[in-house]
Length: 106
Image (cartoon, rainbow, N blue to C red; front, side, top):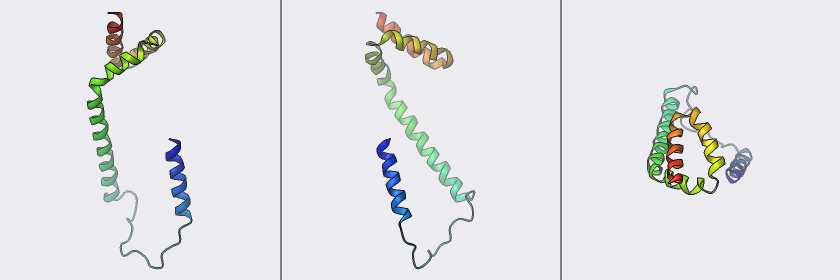
């Protein structure tokens, strides 16, 4: 996070010291932010991000319970108590916690 912030700051610094071109570009910029091109572009980016997120979750699903088992066991009591509280707020989370607790108690 710090590195990406520093890189962004340096890039903006470089852009602020750039000199304008002598000639204008041959094409005009879009007339407003809400033109069709911008809306399609933003929706396309959103679709790609959602696809990558769903794919990553699908690939990680078999490993999640194994990782949670190895991570939760050393700090079982505080983690499981907090997880039970979260399980009441998020229904899907409770079943994962119950499975982990059952595996620990075996």
